[in-house]
Image 1 (cartoon, helix red, strand yellow):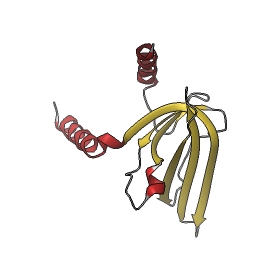
Image 2 (cartoon, rainbow, N blue to C red; image 1 turned 90 degrees about the horizontal axis):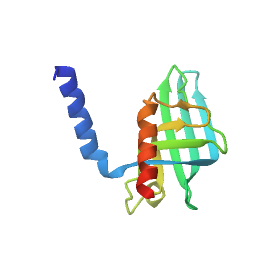
Image 3 (cartoon, helix red, strand yellow; image 1 turned 135 degrees about the horizontal axis):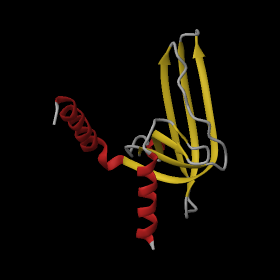
Length: 140
């Protein structure tokens, strides 16, 4: 194993150790999607996206948020509309006693839109399909 592999393995292990219990992944239908872009003095750009998703085979809804700040370039977000089938990967809120509102919101790390076959950050789709098939066979 080379130096790059050891370094990347160290970073992934430490990330999972720190956030492993808060990681969440679910698939469902988009009920509401709201994307807000703001520009301050043509230099600083902010993007805030809020998604409300109903997971498959569930009546509950999940609120997800994505925030990105960037200097000079506009941050990108994929096109998501109501009714699209998406897979969301993110972190659950810390659930502190003081901030109950942020405990219910999932911070988005990646979104895969199965309807338009696009994703926020590139992912190997063959691995996702295998994971989805394993979930279906386990539940039967």
